[in-house]
Image 1: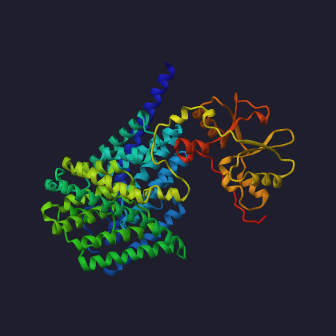
Image 2: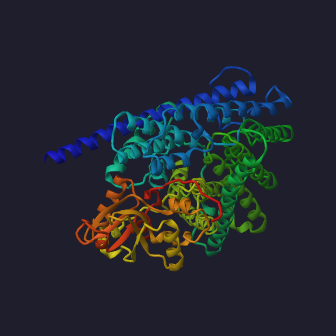
Image 3: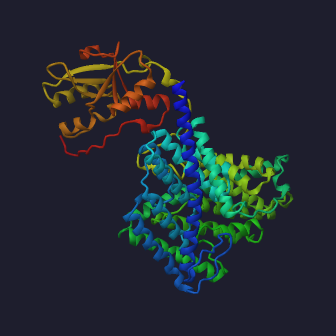
Length: 603
């Protein structure tokens, strides 16, 4: 009974903390918007004001051609903030949140929230082609992590508060509490259960309440009633059009994902420093801004791009070649902005790309097959959902957020079809999403799915590797390596013993493909051997073994009959965390990673 009360109190405390995080994230979204407004009016017009509507086009600046310098000056400020206060604030932010959950025990430095707010607001306000959703996700997550660290809660509770902050940011920014909750489930939460979902749901509700109180109960875009003719799913011919549209959107998302990281690599290889690279990138964006305002009267590619999306949704921007040009220009501007070192999100650019390409597709179909009566606004809405879903991997989030924007149920069925096809096309060519690609590059993979692992309830005797060879170390490492060469590719687990039959080191069989590589004997051994281990029983449960390995901060478990060992000959087999990760499809982050210097010295 006492234990039940303790659990209830713990759940109540976590829920109260989550509500606090949600409220703070809601006000944080308002402060973040205020900073964007302040810096935007100062940069473009030279006056102090907090009045700024992102759904309206920015008027032509009195600076004329000097407007090209505005993004460049912003680049200097952003680089200074990122380099000196929080390198994690660079980029679109969500990968750093995921990395903190899976690889940093849910710990995000408090300075990240303030630095991200300043850096991202300056990037967006001075013309960077990025969104405000990614930053508010990272800001909310940093608030959640800070609360978790200050209150000394457990790691899973801290991760829940991070998810609560991220979901709250989405809920407050888009006025989409369901979308925020689903984003946390699909992208952030490492555990989906009642104990994590309830606090996150409460946080999103609190953030949505604050957001509606501050911004009004209106969606991000004013979308007119969609044409039901274009949403008819009873026509087999129209279904074929949906499939084709889904393929096009999936390829667009693939290009978007690849482009972001291609430009990051290009700028990293460019001579100079972070300041010069970012200034060059934003200078090119400034040139694009000036070219558009000179020839069309609008900057089009600067900032979050909501005004352009609004034009398409209101059917006032329907020229197909201009729509295709805006698609290509925004893709390039976003790649230059993020690739050169800006701080901002990719959610809004994905919406922009989906709207422009979707609108162009509709106009093209009106010329080729007018009997389908495809409407520009309708296809733009479907395109927005498809590109967001396939690029970020948050399919349900995209569907629900767009539904919360349109409040039109007729859009759901075609949206599900198109989003699913677009998601599948992107995944066929590129498994990583725009959020996980960077983590994979730094060897920080995250699970592609969360599932119940019945494997964890099995016994060690069902899965350990029984191939064990015991080798004395009296003849030195050269003799041990010669023994390995004789094993070839069928390398067993090797226990290296001293004269007193105590285990000095373990070479696990999972490293067999590395054992014949040339190198200095001592350095080679140091790179591949394990010196820490635990002893477990053959009947011990995998779940308990993994817990003991993580607590002991080691990789290898030696399996004996009863979990005790007086002599190495009692070892029946070897089980490693890597074996568990591969067999159970668990996340690879549970492995203990050791960074050791590699050697290239010849033997």
